[in-house]
Image (cartoon, rainbow, N blue to C red):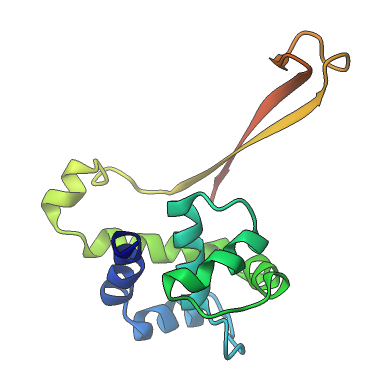
Length: 150
């Protein structure tokens, strides 16, 4: 389990709290929470992504195993909904900027000027509703891809 906690700890060493505070001030975000601040939310989101957690409830149940503070799933949901995606975008830019040139070239990030956020959502319905889009034996569905370019 230790190998799964390396990246959140590494992120904390790469991104200093002052830099995260600078990003928050730049987008005029005031963090008033004591237990669930932005850095803790980011750690929860990283662990959820790495471990493919299914929901906010699952995040809060499994988070304590990864050294995250115990919080309520509704608190996590509210905090995630109030964070502007520009904060995450600026945080990603900061992390990429701190990568050395060799890493940026290997990831082919030298030509990236704008970040494109892509969300892919599968919408499933009964088999008879969309007979042309068979998904499984008793279901039909489509995959919706949304791109956000700021």
